[in-house]
Amino acid sequence: MASHEESAGRARGPSGFPAERPDWRGLVLIALACTPFFLELDHTFWGSETRWAFISRNMFESGDWLDPILGNRFYGDKPLLSYWLIAALAYPFGGVDELVTRLPGALASLGTVLATGWLAARLAGRTAVVPAGVLLATAYGFLSWSRAASADPLNILFITATIAVWVEWRIAPRAWHVPLFFALMAVGGHAKGTPAFLIPLSVVGVDVLLSRPPQILREIPKILVCTVLAAALYVAPFVASYLHRGDWGLWDLMVRENFTRALDAYDHVNPFWYYGAIIPLLLLPASLWLPAGLAHGWRARALPGLRFAWLAFFTIVLVFSASESRRAYYILPCFPFVAVGMGAAWAAARRGEGAAWVRVPVFVFAALIVGVALVVFAGGALRPELAPVLENLPNLRAVALVLALGGLGMARAAARGRIDEAQALVLATAFGLSVYLSTGVQAFRELRRVERPFAGEIAETYPGERVVFYHGAVGPLRWYVGGKDVAKRPRDIALFLDGSGDDTLVLCDVKSCRDGKPGGGRLICLPLSEVRSPGFGPLVPEEDQYALVRCVHR
Image 1: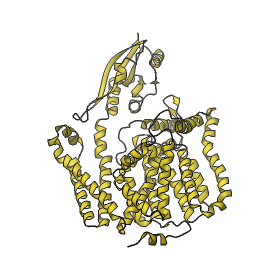
Image 2: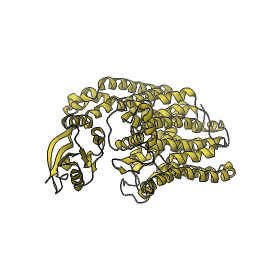
Image 3: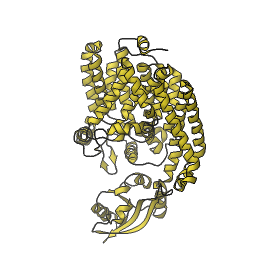
Image 4: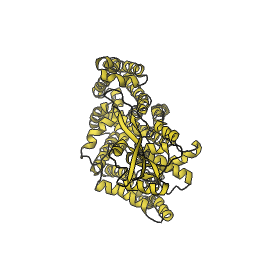
């Protein structure tokens, strides 16, 4: 049995980190755990995903990659990199669709998991690679955003990769480490903005203050030169946009979205402690082992690698908490480092250190899995309101049975002290859950998405007619119906009407239609049809979605 002191004694290099390289089989396993990122990515767009689809398609079709155009207007709320990657993928795929729009995020998340595995080996040893990588890949929040069209997966990848380069420099400095560190920050800044350099610099700053690596003094001239070059690389797209457009619109929106929102938030305002409450929910089921990771981190705080991982985690949480604007998925960049900490706890338990901290959550996880299986098999009979939901989740009973067997197996292995076997069953069960979330649960959600069939109905009933999109209909429905005309106010509809003839079709959310807002005071709006999301009993009721009206002059 190896003690913490013996583990520290095996550390190599001036950093004191274990500095082991991950076994290729471990990297293959954690890459396979990312399979759910890529399953059924062609499901219906939701929320803000169509912003990326519209802007990237316009870039692909027009060849203008410096103007993010949404509808008929310039939309520079996010930097250009995520749009560029989608537009670039459109060439081999023949155009922009749901798969192409989401694929960069899935690939970026795969890269983040592999980078996390690499960090786990360098900071906590080779045996931490697989648990760290799989716990991250199967965490609910990370999995959900890996499958979404968004700038966040790219942002997480660049932050993780930048800090990984710093770790490599701490272990064995190379001439290319400092330039690469600053280049990753500069390019990553065009994924989401300032977090790509604010977070790595904060983590590195804390590490320098606490560890005081002596080699940092020799790198100061190179750091100064690379800072200037990175700043030029970061500013280049903004300058190109100015030369192309004749204004600083892209830069102004970057300042508004990053600095103004962070220092004087105008939305997404949550309390300072918000991330402390949301992290355990987004990390599920991995968060069951968060106490084990924290306990092991405290016991092994003398080990430099593990201390760095937890300092990085807490630094990231504090930086995001200090921002005035707080939203659940903003905190995802801390997940690779908490995964390393939890992976280290698993690795220590296999050596006999703190096994109880790891074993107890195994029983909790097993109980939850078996409890869910019992609900699946008996819940419909005991609580009739559950039946419609359970019946519409595909293959639910077979999946619940397999997962329940895995839960019983992990509990049995933990009770007998077979930590290796328990870990394998925990990770396999977590993987099975993530597969079902990406397929079965996604299929259930798709049953409630009405945009595609409603768009087909409109195209068949009103072929060739112009459609104006108003209020709640400016997202996914506009993608499937087609068209660029968006009205923000009732008078905008009248302006479209003046330029298009005697009447026009208007799509809006049902509430706006019933309130009479589309017509304003100048128009008469005649209801044509409404569509509702289907319900599945009292737990998932029907919901009003969209209305189609014909507007004419009063």
